[in-house]
Length: 129
Image (cartoon, rainbow, N blue to C red; front, side, top):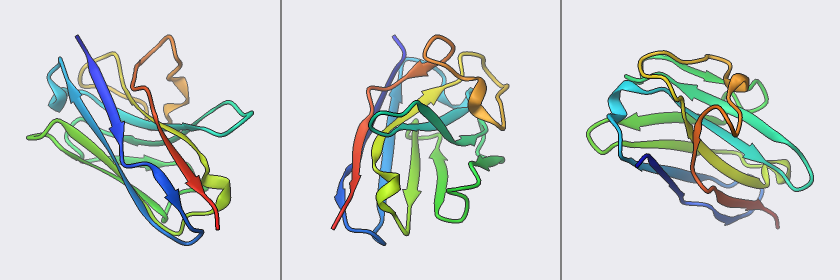
């Protein structure tokens, strides 16, 4: 069974940092692209980042580029999202998502949907003073 479990969320002050983790199991991690999405209260899902199966390529939503960085440790089957200079608008539930197809992926992950992709349950990030 494919599983993705996010952790590392919490309450942080504006300007602070958090590092999210996504631990995975049930598949050959090193052959799949992984994405990060978020959903703010009352809003739809928003793609944030794509990282290729070997970590050689990364892509970001313009609004987070330079503040957020995705990485992966294929030996640990875990992907990370380092988030710096956090703003109140970053408050959301953050999800990691596996592309359902091995080896290939979307630099712009907006093609991923709840029905096309394997999703974790999310971790809450709240940015507030």
